Image 1 (cartoon, rainbow, N blue to C red):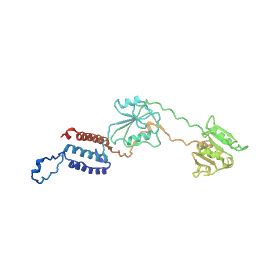
Image 2: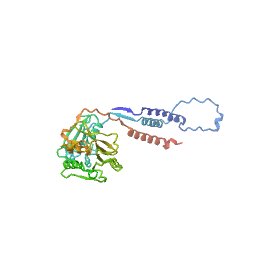
Image 3: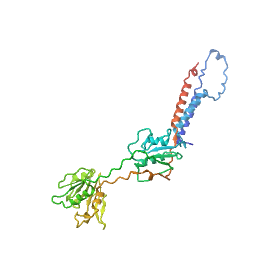
Image 4: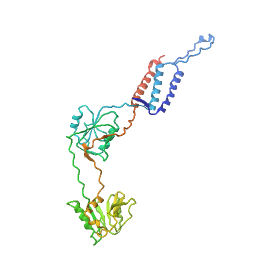
Length: 380
């Protein structure tokens, strides 16, 4: 355990120790000289030289102690190496609390892997997110010598793509009788809404065939009007000429649109090639526009100029193009996700002693007041 001062300059306040010393020299214990008539017949003699002395030494000592404690408070004393290195146990969401208590023992402090790390006796967390980040946080805030045990269900939720690497070797226990994890929902197929010119619906069949390939119950509609679909749909705009402002606003507010090669619009500066053929020609370009995405074919949708519309992989490529970006995997087999060691330890912050020092200051002030205001001090 190493003591230290967070703000050593605060000790400059010790110069105030001179104040009570001067006060006690100036205000000696009340000795009032009394003149009487017979004194006039006495010969005047030189007064003896007064020695430097202090009265009420206990009161003076208390006042000096109070000022010294206040100066120490300004310097913010702290200690390093005063950490509790007792074993810690944390449990991931999905672990049965009764099973966790049986593994840990009746008197062991067990915490949930959740924001704030609540105790095991509280309700189990329902949101299984940020598991990896919370484990790293708990490990970083733990004293270097404290053993750590992590209880996890067979399938762990809320992980990120990076394998856990902690500052210590942990005990990774899989609790088999944890709460079953619900299977991940299969991604739904995109909804295509095609808008094409009057009498020019030859390209519509390619998108209809793609929607049928995605699902047994394809979600697809086509029309010649300019009505915009719900923002959850993918707008396939095959109308030639300038793109209406309403379409641009629809995209900017979070929509996804795929334009034909004859659509006239200023593409975003961040546009890039999103689909290229075997010869390296860009077939679709695009990028973000506001909160949405805009893409455009660079070639007419006719087999003579774009043979890819007849390729077997057209439906799969189109789906990858217009679907929402997939979120990174957040579920993994716990047995394959055991943490590795090797992460650099974090320097734990010093523990400040302001609370204890505040109590000492309060006691010293109370003692000083009691001693300074006692009746006997002012007795005649």
